[in-house]
Image 1 (cartoon, rainbow, N blue to C red):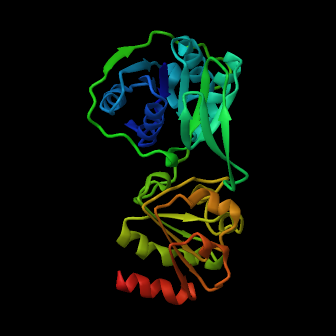
Image 2: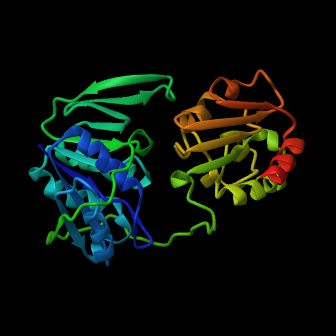
Image 3: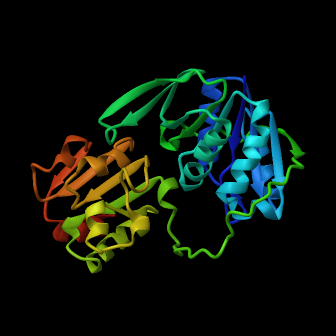
Length: 308
């Protein structure tokens, strides 16, 4: 068996999610190659080569692959697919954009957001907002798979894989990059943070989210939000944790004023330690919390910050 992993990278650096996808590839077994596609990606390729278990890093360095647009990237992977039995990518915006196109080009089914590997052709993935786990077996010769990064522990950095260039340049007349607008923050990225503190509808307003700032600063935490808080206009949607937002599994997750709707739990219930603060002792969030505090958040948060 041979596996190709699409490397995820941002701002000239290899994304941590790639190491989680490599861990999934190791669980499948076989030779593991990483594909680094982009423009000016030499440093990213060198970082990918250091990941444990990687045999080879294949580098497609060309302006056609800048910004990892889905059409040329999918064409590139489809061109290389004949060398592999499995194609893997993180179940991120990029992976969800690229791999379904690859599956269509190769006329095979896609298996989405796997959280464990049962065998090289059988995988587990959540359905019904994580309330059930489906075991899915694929009879396709080529398995196209997106990986939920929170389901696998990242591999280490002790490897020294060979790096080789890929000459194929995809023709792309379908899409062009226009611009991107990025939210700037000194805090950790939500999906990669070891500590996350999230606010819900109980915060009452966007201004009250500042109550989370001091705690987040002391804990080195990212700040998230429930869908209810986002829909109410308290915070932007890039802060949303849940089934239709970011899937997180930090060492510590603190839920403040969040009732614990199924949609939110699907995005954070794999966190190692869950702390809930809510004045409603019947809130569903307490059913998954390791520690629960029944209290008014407007009193509890300043006191928590002071004690920290």
